Length: 305
Image (cartoon, rainbow, N blue to C red):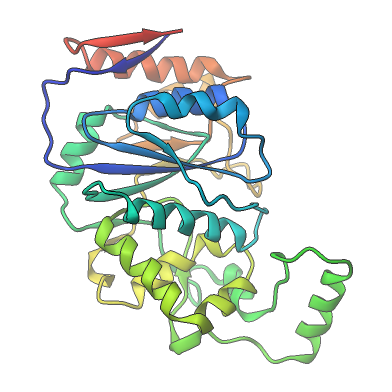
C-alpha cells in the first residue's frame, strides 16, 4: 500500500519543484511522485523522447504534476541528458509558480525523509546549493579526459568513433572556455531557483561553452557544478548532494538497493537515495514507506494500492 498525504499540519513558506528525469517503469514513477506530492510543491517530469508516453499519462492527473513538453532523446554519457535537464529547468522557470528550490531526481530515486523534514532542512539552509563537486585536476583526475579529449557521444553517424580517435590523435588537448576550473561528480542536486536561472542563462548566453560541452563525455556530472563553481555562487556550494548512493560495486551505475540495505537506508540522514527497482525489490521501498508513514502519524491520507 502506498500513501499520499494531504491535509498536513506543517505549513511551509517554501515551494519546491522536483524535476524527475525518467525513461521507464511507470508504476515506480507514480509511487515516487505520490511520495513527493506535498503542500504547494510541484513535480515536473521529463520523459525520454524514445519512450512511449501513453503508459505514463495518468500520472499527469495527480495534483501539481506536469510533464515537460520539450522532450529530448537521451543517450547514456551524451550531452542529450544535459539538454533534457535544461528543458526541464526552462519550463520550471517559465511556469507561473513562485519556485524557491529545484530538486533534480531520477525516476529510480526515492525519499528517505518525509516532506516536512525536507522542507525544514532547506528552510534552515537558505541559499545553499547541495551538489557534489571535486576538482578534476586534483581529486577527480580520472574525469579529466572527459574535457581534454573530443567525444562524439552525442552524435549518431557511422564512423563517429573512428573520427573521434583521429581527432584526439591529431588535435591538442582541449581547454575549458574562459579558463574555467572543471569540477563535478554526481549529476543529482538541490539548488535555489536563482541558481537554476543563472545556469540556464549562462549556457544560453555562452555559445562557445555550450559547443565545448556538447563534445565532452557525461557532461551531466560536471557541467552545472562547473558553472556555479566559477561564479559568484561558489561560496554557497555545499559538497553534499543529500543523496545516499552506493558505488561499492564499482560499476558504471550505482548499486540497486535491496532489503539487505534496509538498516543503512533507514539510519541514513540523507534526504533521498538511489537507485531502486520496484519490480524486483519492492520490499526495500515498502520498508522505507513504513518508516515514513510512522513519521506522518496523525496526517490525513489517501491510500492507493
